[in-house]
Image (cartoon, rainbow, N blue to C red; front, side):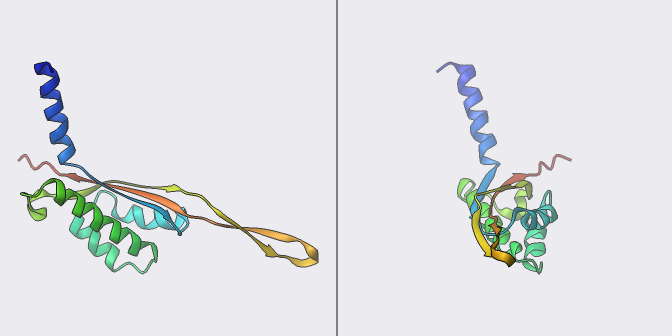
Length: 134
């Protein structure tokens, strides 16, 4: 491997250490309801985001709290020597995508049927480290 390629590979490895992902798939909540909670924690420090999710009355906040804790654990696994408090972790990106729908039929008057679509979603959460260079 050439020296330039080796240096780029080392830089790429270091950049990957600073990021941590967690994914939640097929969560049985509608994406619209989940986005309301996800918008509250986007771009916020991890400690503050955990407090927001813990005291939120929404059902979706429980799932996002577990997902955030999982992302923190993933970051800790990559950076065993660093501490969370000193790292300055924040929610870099969080997005909610639609997943498959369960389609059901509900009886309606005069022999008809109405379609019920039970929606689910996928959530992807990425943590980043704030560079404190002052």
